[in-house]
Length: 211
Ligand SMILES: Nc1ncnc2c1ncn2[C@@H]1O[C@H](COP(=O)(O)OP(=O)(O)O)[C@@H](O)[C@H]1O
Ligand SMILES: [Mg+2]
Image 1: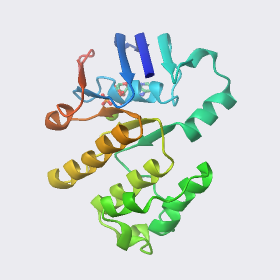
Image 2: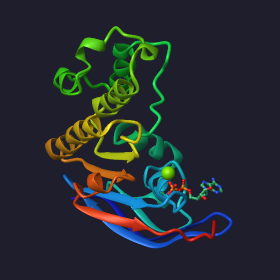
Image 3: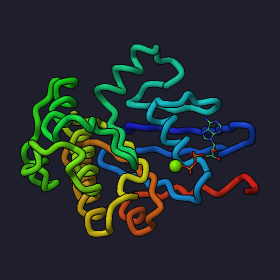
Image 4: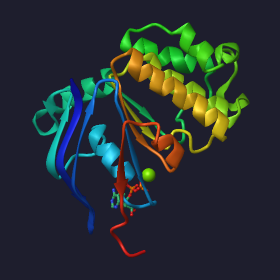
């Protein structure tokens, strides 16, 4: 089943950013978006993840056309079906690891997944405040938080940008395993060609603007 279908998507700010982007993301599949800074990778991800409205072309998320969804329907999809991982983690600094993950599970009526915590090596960090964790640990907590709500589609914008390559690979292992075991899909923005090559397809964005 197609989880994300993008057809002839174009986007401009004060100049054309990208034109006629088309792809299809099916269950258990991953697509990497690569390209130089400023080529529109994050913009594409934001549109597909409902954070930015499409201007022209079609985006079908879980079989539903983005243009035809009400704001409430979009909120519901965002809360229940979509997981977004950013390079900076947006964890609640004053709370500990357990509380940060618990919050996501409460919002979605799911349970904290202890296998997931073990896989990420964060099961011993549950009572630690976010500020006490290293950058790599913080990112692992933030990804565990996103996966706890069992999203159908994962959007990840340079999720391993702040991690060393060993940790980055471990984090990606968990993401790939997650989409396989949960019939989910991954749209990954990355600078790392090696990581991109682990995906089923690569979309390359070219710079459109003279810098
Ligand atoms: N809301 C916005 N308004 C105007 N320009 C924007 C906006 N968001 C992004 N841009 C511009 O669009 C270009 C592409 O941005 P982005 O999608 O973040 O690229 P990438 O993720 O590939 O680095 C950048 O030049 C950026 O300044
Ligand atoms: Mg970006």
